[in-house]
Image (cartoon, rainbow, N blue to C red; front, side, top):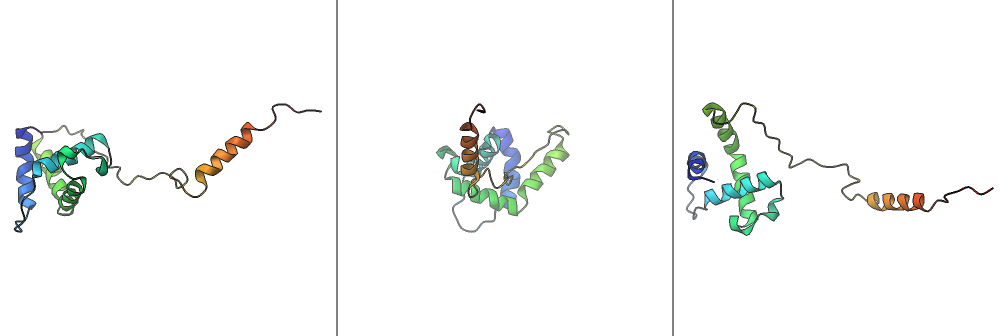
Length: 127
């Protein structure tokens, strides 16, 4: 993240961070980690160590989500006209497949057995 980009985000992050006596985290590094996950689509647990512990990045992301930080940032981006009007985002963190493909009881086993039965059928009919 460039210094110019960080300057834009920093004002929002500092406005929602309450001083509670704890040592502040490196919010720029956490934000870079959040953007890495969003950009790659990888699970949080696959976050490279250079961004810190994945659980800390996820925990901070959740805190920012609960206080409405992302909505504030998107509203500011829309008002500033920095991004084109056609920019759209789709969040698919909770998209699930049908219960069979994700390993429901017998799902894959039944399909393999069915494929084996079809493959072992006789190729010709004898009279």
